[in-house]
Amino acid sequence: MRAATNRRGSTFFRCTRAEVDARFVRYPPLPVRRCPGYETAMLFVVLLHYTKPLAEVDAVHADHVSHLEAHAARGVFHAWARRDPPTGGVLVAAAPDRATLEAVVAEDPYVRAGVARAEIVEFAARNVRYFPNTPMP
Image (cartoon, rainbow, N blue to C red; front, side, top):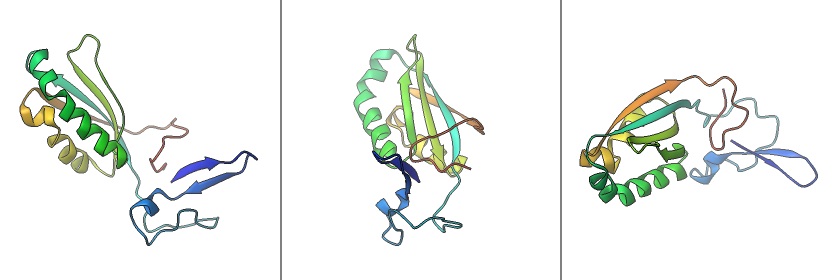
């Protein structure tokens, strides 16, 4: 779900599942007590550690960013950046489970090209107020 507040201050909850599945209504009538499309997402930090010189990493960079953007559109990746100093990267991700995220990370061009290895850290965020496209527990 995604919260949407209008100019008058009313908040509505948009079903993001409706964007990809016609069985769901974009703005369901409230209160919604149960939803068959609801999935609890686990939050992760993916630490990328470069295993090759930066020049080799940069050769794959455009494909890596395309991969991140494609999965950001699906609600998997929410933020990413290169570390400073540039020894790797950091990704913030949400997925239904670790195995799902591992499959996405395994397809990352950096990992496939062997220029980086990924370390996945799972955490249970308790103080997040709003994280776009991520169902809150």
